[in-house]
Length: 416
Ligand SMILES: Cc1cc2nc3c(=O)[nH]c(=O)nc-3n(C[C@H](O)[C@H](O)[C@H](O)COP(=O)(O)OP(=O)(O)OC[C@H]3O[C@@H](n4cnc5c(N)ncnc54)[C@H](O)[C@@H]3O)c2cc1C
Image 1 (tube, rainbow, N blue to C red):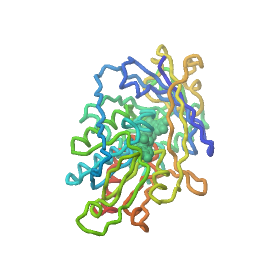
Image 2: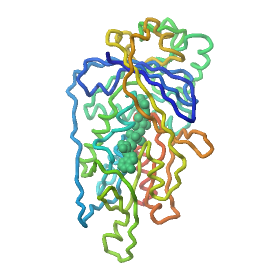
Image 3: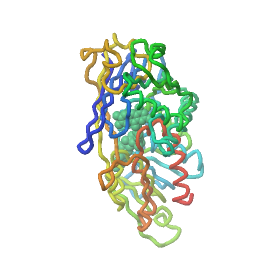
Image 4: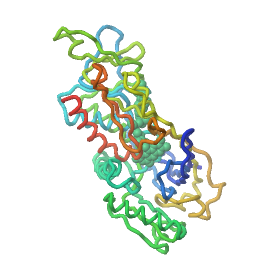
């Protein structure tokens, strides 16, 4: 049995419920021949249609298992020195580290990550979808970065030989009431420049998904699936190939500014100390990409804790192998799975793995939908630290375009 389903619950927000049926991208790196995922997520205010998606990738590729670089820092006086230290070895931190290394080869860069491997949190525990950018508000950064990110992602996956499947996605309306919302979504997709998206009639649905039923649907041919954890590891390899260092098991517990006015001393040149338990690295500047911990990291450096991070837990259900043939790609329903595929019953699914989404919440309780950067220019320490406080979903799909944006931001904020 290998399919999965999720429910996401926040103590603060109750949203609409989405259901997705997906093959687990996580299994792309394991040896199981076929795996399927159903996900039920309570998403705040976003989805007009919910999600039923599914894919069939056979595990025929020999996947690259990258060994993570582990460097042990001595507790002696010598602390390694870098131009920029990036905190957080998730997909956003690693994509940005890679981009900075490619754009500024003269800079000495390192990444510090508290876990013993990269992509341990959101980046390795997500739905594995390469989103096309249909849902996001036209004109928003999210919409632009997703559409750009999709194209960059496919180019990157091809270049690196990372396995993926461009299985497409159907968003299905099952009655006339849902057709209105479907048409709104279609307008959004067109405004956002989602490539090759089509509106199809009910009788055409079976051409894409033989077991699915509905009265109208949106067909997005470029939606795909990939193991984003594996992609993060590739970013890490590219970064190390450019001379970057990655410190694992390095939980940042403090940032300090060394006061030393004597020019030419290490303290003057690399004044920021990034401290873990009994270890430290020195640098000129810091970028934090801490996902669920980004508010805590901001507080450590003297910045405001707001916007705070609200965790949304997503649990997945696994669909039995013998039902896997019933879904070919990604199907996004409005209500329940059975409405779209009547032949799937409760006995066909079981509880699977879970993931926790980092959602930033403003002081007034509203949810932050776009990116939030923060630098406390009023303090000597704070002015050297840029916090990426919110990298909302689809952060994995958009990771290469987000990285370009953050690298530009670092260039201007740190006068690189
Ligand atoms: C359930 C779920 C499903 C999703 N599905 C999709 C999808 O299908 N497609 C898509 O494009 N996006 C999806 N997303 C969104 C995507 O996964 C995230 O936007 C992306 O992974 C965020 O990456 P990140 O690097 O910001 O965060 P993370 O991956 O959480 O990385 C942050 C890192 O910072 C480290 N860190 C934190 N504090 C410290 C510290 N003090 N010292 C050192 N290191 C520290 C953490 O250990 C962690 O490794 C999904 C997210 C979730 C949760």
